[in-house]
Image 1 (cartoon, rainbow, N blue to C red):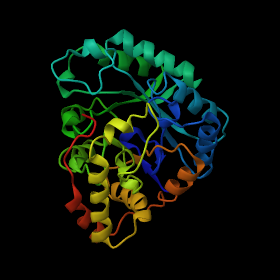
Image 2 (image 1 turned 90 degrees about the vertical axis):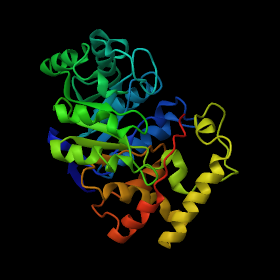
Image 3 (image 1 turned 120 degrees about the horizontal axis):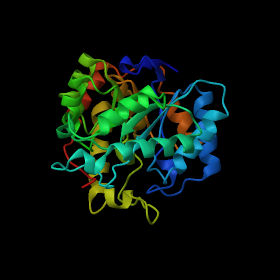
Image 4 (image 1 turned 180 degrees about the horizontal axis):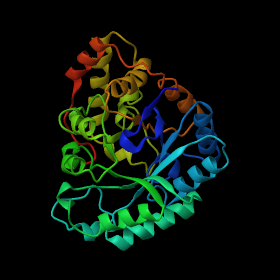
Length: 322
């Protein structure tokens, strides 16, 4: 496993981290706790040092599984979690005062709850689960974060940027108030390359990449015949004719690169890790099989430059969450 600095935090994090939304059993169906715990443990065995979770993932269920795993290990593993907006609106709309979403008492209360769920004294990276750059300099969230740092309850602070809105955190990055950002970045959504990633490089902000497979599209496993369990959010994400659209886009990549569909997932991860601003990528991994497949990619080898340039042709501007 290869390791990178998480921006100016100084934390050495594995190139491939662990996205723990799926194991929380909220919106992703099919996760079993025994297998989730085995997957977490296997990832650490293979050199993983970074896990990202959230209070909102199964109302703390994901945090409890992560905490149980990390507390039982001797290895150093860094954990980031997230504070849900008080109004529970995802993504954050513009025009709201930050005290409607992250009032100071809410920031503190959620942090205390996450610490209990995890069984930790300190959270390595605490994040706001949504963000609007218009909140900069407004509301009580900043003072609450600073107080939590002084009390030793959080080490570093970050935000998870609204879906497909990478430029909506550039002012925050330039302000120096944030240590990390979490952003959607993949072969289809290359928009972070335009403004966000250069700003992070300039200001020493760590980059945590989520949704590397576009919710499964960039694994080659989504076809018009794919079915999801009732209650799985992907029924909405891939509704109408979107499965066919995805399959056609993936087949175009396969054809242009001269690879097989079985190689798409690895190529998707290596494309992300080829950008020097990226600190870690956090695919969701609910099984040991997926852990072993994805962890192999964290070997310090990016994509050949000719493949990176070919993949630039496959930028796809759309929002399936809407």
